[in-house]
Image 1 (cartoon, rainbow, N blue to C red):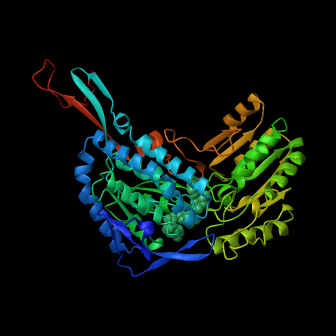
Image 2: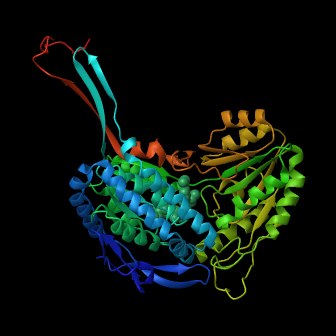
Image 3: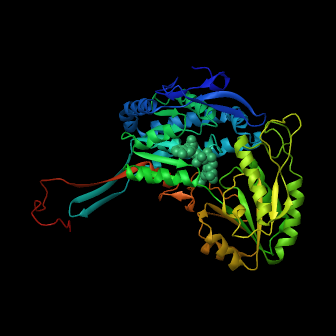
Length: 505
Ligand code: NAD
């Protein structure tokens, strides 16, 4: 057994064919501890030749793995699940050290990831086909679901463990082999997962990890040996991945960015709504694709709601994610922190009312960490950039509208459509909202409606390019191809096939 990766100093390697390997590019990138601002290690960047090596390892492992009984594949997932549960805290510590989110939040992230592994343990049931006896006279038809082959996943920085786990447990349980290009900012959690998969009995080459930037991604997108690509990240890159994969004849699902709204009606329990919104807006420093970043306050809800949000935003305890009693950690990099802060400058310039201003925060003892305080803007309008752009930081904007109808129209006019929430006590209003809103995931008095693993996760419009969502039954569909078999046995009392179009009747 290799030394656990998080204990190894120096450079994070690639993981190909069941073992850590150095890359051939000679390139690497820094991995920071965002709470201290220090470079803690470097990460190897894969060259196209390393992607070739990963594909070769995945192709070599494929025939045996795809023909292994689904139950045997599920048993590997069961062992992996047990190992993830044993190592949940240690994995969360890796996430906190590289991403910056608080430890309880990171433990929750691992939990939501391992729930997809739990789902994948049921794969024999999910791979069952259909059968029709006598689809024609003495002719039977059945379907089988077969793996696609070598699949790849490309993932963002904000969920170092969970987002990769949306992909590879389902892909692997379905009989595919997998290459993960995890975000270069947070490489270590997936290396630890690779070790745990090996420990669970996964054959070498079924799961491979390459790190890197555009060079590694482009090598994946161009590789003829890769049949399907799952991507999660920002909208411009999601669109690029989708278009490039489509051009190269690959199956693709590309989940993009978000601007998630919460509509608050005057009849809502405003205290409950404000508590929910504060966690949803500022949890994980706003670096969640399902973070609420825009509140749409309807009518008389606005003034009392903004008062509550202000009080709660000011009370948030900011510090290193590993610290006790911390609500919100740092942002991922200095560059990103500065970019988010520049949106606060812009909001002020655009004429939004600054209720809480998070700029200029320093955390005692962690002066070089990538911290930014919470910002709350009121009286924001749809023409302002602070509303239009995905800021991906601790900045919450409030827009005011007169009616539920106006709120629905505003949300539906936004090009992003990942998640949305409504806060109300009215079943009729909630039902109308659910019916008319053009967004993939809807919460009713639930601010972050991330579906459980046996449902599927995905947005609409610019938040997802492709048609199938991740995990749940849509994940199984993405990672399998349907084959339809029509069977007739000779020497029965039916006429032999002739020259006309068979009608099977
Ligand atoms: P990103 O798009 O910058 O990077 C995502 C992945 O793409 C990384 O692995 C990165 O190395 C790679 N990449 C970056 N630039 C590339 C380029 N020019 N060519 C090829 N590959 C490239 O996203 P990020 O900053 O890591 O993550 C934050 C974004 O992810 C936000 O927009 C957030 O909303 C989104 N996100 C969406 C979901 C969802 O479910 N829709 C979930 C999590 C995060």
